[in-house]
Image 1 (cartoon, rainbow, N blue to C red):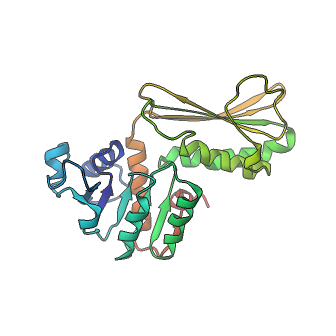
Image 2: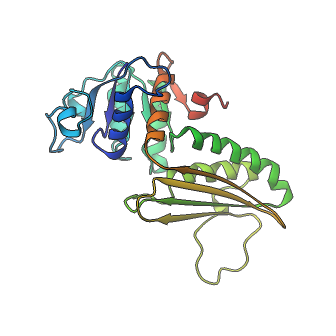
Length: 270
């Protein structure tokens, strides 16, 4: 399968290319060919081959999105929230599928992305790791069971010191699942705590973010009751797990009709 990566020289772009080059554990693909490594229009490495710049075994030329020939297998986009819509519009010219792993969208940006699902098969996921997407399902299931018994839900995430958005997209997805499970809305969310804020409200979801070092991604969900607590935790130790999930998602979209799919669809969790 031929595919492209938007943000091909970033940390996740390189991880996906490395995973594809090894062909190991990529959900039964016999081979994967990165034929469209895409970077922003002023990138200094445009025009060079991907192998020459990264040492990863693909000889395709690094190009800007405007000049890219979108492969039939589609695109994986790990670029920037402000530019993802352009990737989707480019893919829509041929109907190629797109997997979006970028986070940090405003509600307006997210709405614009989802609207493109009328033209292309599309997955937008805050976290591509297989385990995290199982965690999403477990958290919502646990929340529905524990909410009637007064368990307080709290979310804590830790990421490396280069991460720009807070809370993480994964933490936001966890929060949204808890809000559904507890019947709350965004007004019930408390991001961090400081000062004399009084007792914890009964109808509250706490979301805390820590930053430091090279932490790839830790997420812990607490259900805190009287005399007992439950913790559901996921730790990512390297980006290969996200790369494997992104490639599995792109495989899932092959031959699909236009529509907005999810990692739950990929994993059969629906």
